[in-house]
Amino acid sequence: MEPTSEHSSIKEEVENDNVHRSHESECGSLLLNPGNVLMAAPSVSEDDQEVSRSTPELRSHVENVEQLLSDILHDNSSPLNVSTSVSSSSNNTAVDEIIKLLSLISFDLAKQKRTYLIFSSSGKPVFSNIVDDSIEPSTVGALQAIISSFEVSKEELTSFSTFSNVIVVLSKNPLYLVGVSPSTTLSAAYLLSELNLLYCQILTGVTAKAMQLTLNSRPNFDLRRLIGSNEQFLKELCDQLNDYELVPTLNAISPLPLRSSFRDQLSQLLLRETPKSLLFTFIAIRGRLVCMVKAKKLLLHANDLYLLFLSLFRTQSFNDSMEHWVPVCFPTLNPDAYIYIYSYFLCKDTVLIMGSSESGVFFEMQSVKCKVAQEIQDHGWLKKLIYCEEMDRTTPRNPGSPCISHYLFYSKKYSQFYTPGYSFSTPNFNTRTLYAIYASLHDQAFHKKNSFSINMTVHESLLLFTWSTASFDFHCIANATTSSQLLIANVNKILRWIRREENRLFIQTNLSF
Image 1 (cartoon, rainbow, N blue to C red):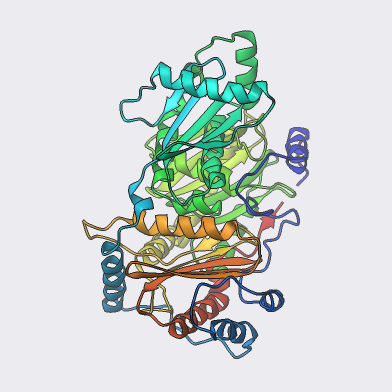
Image 2 (image 1 turned 180 degrees about the vertical axis):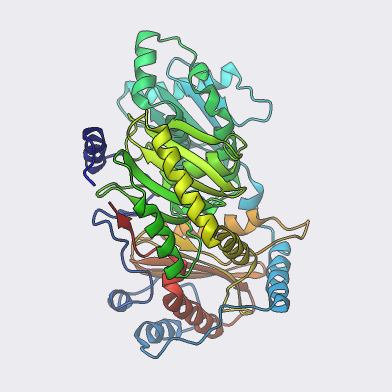
């Protein structure tokens, strides 16, 4: 299919995309690479064998841990035959174990909440996540004075500290974004990445160009009037950032694990219905990508998809039985242009999304929706999707259990991650503690100078383990009494299982038109 001229202009803008990406690896923000094919699934590979020869940073008194890891990397034996099905009794045991472990510790990072302030260069408040939704003028004035003093001397202020807080600043003319965090182990780069995501959320509703033009003509214009409809999404994003949700923490997506044959069937269905103005079509369930087809050379970034999913799944604005047709800016793709989004929920938690470069093709998109929805219904695929999502969310696929209570595998190659699902029904348990641990581990791993590093630390009753290579990060949580030898052996089990199941856990093929 030959794209329209408008379509081509968007793709040219994509290819010239030089938007700054803070706190990311070189390809960390890319869901799809320029070759339109997802890179090989992350696993223990030959590339990692070379990396393993470098000296890892290791906090352990066990002298043979490095040799154990080397054995894992060079072990060419057949993968372990680990069953992916787990009985309900073992499910309960695994869940009880991690609940018990996390309930016994005091992880300060999980208790601390960050405050976010946004105000214009003229000193007018725009947004804050303060409970009473009010920003004291004196606070804004003091912050503006500090920022301006650095701008006068042509220096960039990114962060400064007080006795008990770390304050980070992101200047995006005509806006200033400020984050106030209790002194934590999180880096300033991590906190700045949160501010950048908040700025991107603002741009989804009003482009940078439109905002600048408005203030150029009316310098004292109240920007709250311009972004007022975006406020509920900003508040939800602040809540998710404070809860250390994994998608914004890693800047990666978590696809729904499916048989590759089933995923291909859905992708082929979407590929058959591609109007000329179409840029992409995908199906998502509960904020997890199921499948996607897209125009050639179109790059979609994890942050842009996350912000779109945030508005669709985490608010009531779009999650209904209605069809929606709205202009949405994808800031990392192009902060000065809109893509027209058609969304329709096939059921409560499963959505069909189409993006177009043209504003007047609603009925064309509607026709595609009718055909796709009918075929999905006829084949019974919707029920199958719902079942697969529920099973993944409630079943802890953990070959390292009971030694390893929980783990997170993050692929740097194509920005996807997998972590086993749990259904936490215990009133006293909050996944915030678990996610805060992973946020801290990921932040530390990101700033290591070596591409290969190993870190084992004990925090109260927990043993926290991180293995970082050029192609992946692996984090896990175990009981502090676990020996290093036993831990490494079970890490091996999990990595072998991921290698065997990679075509289910990750999206490895990408269809384009």
